[in-house]
Image (tube, rainbow over all chains, first blue to last red; front, side, top):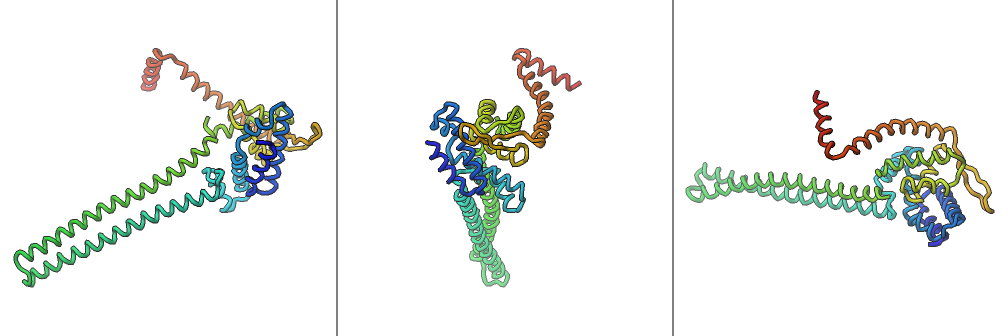
Length: 201
Length: 122
């Protein structure tokens, strides 16, 4: 890559940064490459050694964000600084990627919640049905409308239904906990990938 | 090396280089890059931040028909470096301790570890 190509791309990657910072950085790297060439290195070699303009820009953006948060600690600046520290803003594809990850996480959490609610409602229905059947057969037994095998059979059904429902509730609790843990692991995986990317810089 | 550690050391190294004499970006970079194994583009954010924090003042001087930006140490920068050097004093002792324990040979190593734990038990 030539000096001008590098500086153009760097300038583009810094459009999100305050104009004074952008100008300062471009001035620095223009001088840097010229000094290196004066010292006998080739333009291509220096530019390659500086790494990709995107990487250079992300270092500058991270510093700018942290500096702004230190100067003016508004909630917006502080959360941006936190994001920078966690490496989200310093990724070359910054905002869109961050939005995608957050949206995906919300979807996962929403789906998990919906599933749990659906299962819970189903179990509630079963429990209700079991209780109704059991109660009705007890009632019928008492008033003598149902006798013998039919009565025992229906009562048995009711009891089995209730037992199954209780068992299902316990199972649901385990599943809910498991799902929550799963979502937690997912978040940890995401932030692990992000900070791993940052650590290699 | 741990990235956070590297970042702190980079600040100290840059301060030291500028203390040694007014200098410019390329020169600072060449002096620190091999020492800390960082990319050449890692230096600019440090120089910029230290300048904004008042550790450096800058001026332009002509060189070969163009203007070059020079960095010069300020009293604030000197104080920052002095403080860092104080912290490094403690670091000396710690590093020495770590390096010494490593050098014990294997045969004696087992014995010495035993001596250490027995000694602590007394």
